Length: 195
Length: 207
Image (cartoon, rainbow over all chains, first blue to last red; front, side, top):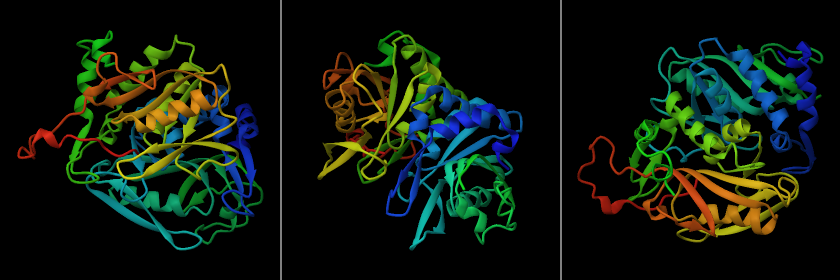
């Protein structure tokens, strides 16, 4: 589901602050750059507020953020809703005991890690990242949390890219102009969609 | 300068913050007592207190920019920026930031690395706070100070770190800029590794 449908007046202000950088990191890719949003304190605050308003009071005790841009949005949300923040990281960055989940890239694969003991069985979790494209990284994140016994309540992203609409990961296809409602059976909430 | 020497002597929040940080011996390599702040992030009150202490210090200093160093600086910087109404600027490893960037090289134990910032992020006249989880040698922070100050003409007001080595006590400055630190590193966690001597306390890698 998308906040665009709710027509919250803050969403348009947020959308206009996201800069599109063509041909980054390689030719053909239109990169959705959220750093320009971070340069606007009101738009950045509105972004966090929209998520906080949605998730406060829903018994979410864990906010997991995906390295590295998920680390920018996740902690302010976690602090505001009274949850702990858990960083999900590229391999070998987290010290101590970790669990690891592999996921496929366009070419090859990568791995996402989470600390053992960060999350307790039965905890309700929110996953946060700046953007969802194919959903591969988000699925890996959800798997990590579920392997630790947590229940993923929702995945929250600022931006959704069109790839997801045609992705084989999704149980539902062909919703015109709407954000994906479900990612592997889990609800997905995005603020801004790009067609 | 340490918080305890600058107005927060005996503040119980500092002890709780210190205790919430886990020490992981021999990470990323033998001899390093890694100060793991992820356990601090699991303690909502201690994490909130950490942010609050920085916010209380900086809210009336007219800070217009908070720059956070990838990646653990991203975990603290944005919350501070939001609370004081400043913009947040990520300082990143090479090739991560799109658009036009400037780059500052800094020394590692073996070799060098680079810190990048987007050119339109900061203007001359901006008053900046630089945030990271920990300061050890100060190499990364010095590169950040050069990026914002020397290269972009902003005024770096201070560097704020959760953990800092005792070398930075007193009036110690980095590139002429003050460094404000909440707690010192701890050596051993729960005495499980009592055989490890304190002389193994050493510098740790950037995050």
